[in-house]
Image (cartoon, rainbow over all chains, first blue to last red; front, side):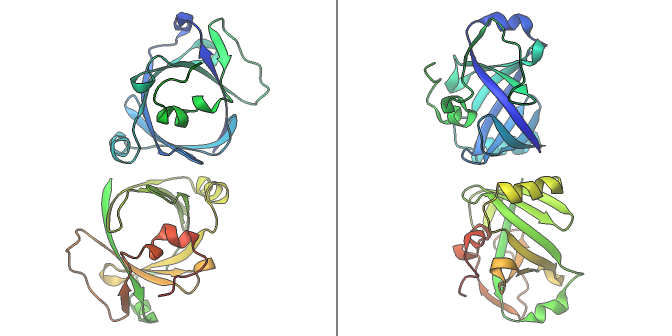
Length: 152
Length: 152
């Protein structure tokens, strides 16, 4: 078990691309249970994971297990209500990650940073927009059910 | 992924004990999600498992993954609504398993057999009582929420 502290922001330009470490990783994910706890199935490139997240927006208990990719494909197809979230995640220098969404959320770009504790200072690049950590519309399980990207 | 076909019966006497293979295995289990799909956390002796079961009473898709026992203990304590199901499972000759429940379900004894297909013939020992496969009160997720054993 890990306790995850994650802050999430909108992105105001493409300038983050200059800070990318390597190519983006293609993610497909859906929810076996979108309530509490959140139970997520994720395909990440050739790997796949089952993740359980306890309640809480900022800091939450998280359990993650690798699973066979064919199991993930079967669960995404038969047990996770559509639509499935599709996005490409790119790691940047300084610990930031940027998610460029596709499918029903095309147009949405979010930046996330994981912190060791809630008060830890972190870099704030020029392309960083409004913080949406506490905005429930930008939680992944809400995005999965949304008809399109939230109005910023 | 496996498709599980399981038939479940009441037990009318203790005569099954003469057919036991080895000692019983102590199980503790709770549900991260008791709806559809069922998502179960189970401690089985020193091991632990996370299991996902698709819809259906008789035949259902099932995905099962071993997880660290300390993760199971943390999830049973914090993410699974009480009460936790406690039972001792004993394997018998001929493929039967008998569950003797404890805790809030003390007094309940159930026999289960797993079959390769729904029409497969199976042994029917003298201690076997009424079939409860199709009775939703005897599903494990319903038992977890029950105040006590169902009235037979």
